[in-house]
Length: 396
Ligand SMILES: [Zn+2]
Image 1 (cartoon, helix red, strand yellow):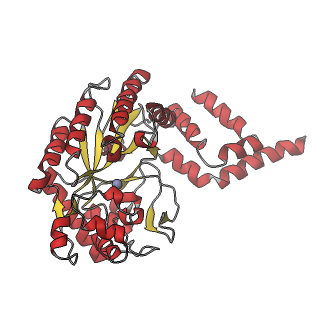
Image 2 (image 1 turned 30 degrees about the horizontal axis):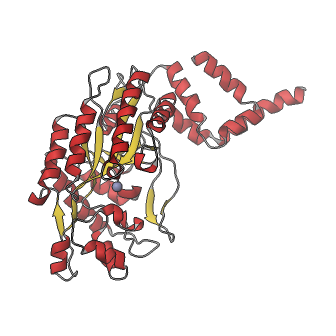
Image 3 (image 1 turned 180 degrees about the vertical axis):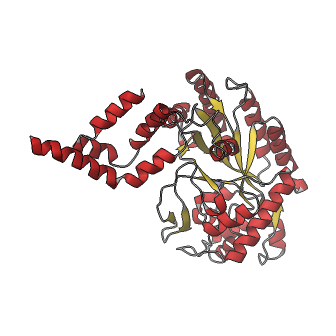
């Protein structure tokens, strides 16, 4: 019996040592005082003109709702600044890549709809990329892949969603698999071009960047940071290339909110999903809000423009409407913020939003530990749950 009493704390210590690094990281991750919700929607911008009507409808929907401070929900828009000019490319017999940019007169309805939502404070543009692909890789792929050749030189404005998935990554050359890295000068030049265009079109430097397909690397971070990007949206890890199967691949490390990358860029984690076209309903969004709020984390719900255009659109608008209505009812203290505001609050330790009280931070930490792979099981097996439970009782 006495031996068991000695063994127990030893087992607890072993589990704690084993998990020391993630447990400490979870403790240092900022804890939020209030539930926070932001809808993060990617792939808008240069391209299909029917986006204008979808954006107008989203603007109207978002303006129907308010949090208790009177703030409308914000939909951050991952903006693509250019699309292939298929007509001009055809005129060069496919030898030269040419683009239509978002400020081209042919894109005026889309840009007007974006600006109207920004003026109403319901849209917040974020940099997704000059293109949703690396143009030289798409040009190279068109030599061997007929689908890509047709995409690049078709009759109408192409949709980036129709490209083979590996080619939708901008910061790796995926004409061959595994994909090849871009050179530093190529990255620097492309980052300078896209941040410059974002600034010209929207009148502000891009502060938040969302890497396409979440493939990027240190060189991209440094180049973006040199041009004013302060925050990078991540899925909680970083992919750097496409593997032999074409899937995004990286070093597998975990990234938490508030951690820093190259030149001080701040990471924000977006790992909750609301894609009505894939069957997600309001309940999935509300469940994500509940999970994130229990962990004192902001809820960044990932969604894409494909939900809000064409056949799935009616259902998507209906579910988004329900999600926002029910979130406001279920969480009277809910705050609608933009991702930039979330990043700034963490960077400046805004005490209106970020928790500093010990019991509340402990509760958040305990809830977060339950998300660590196998930790809860090991804690149960060794009886570590008991001291953790006592800690929770104290913090309640
Ligand atoms: Zn995208």
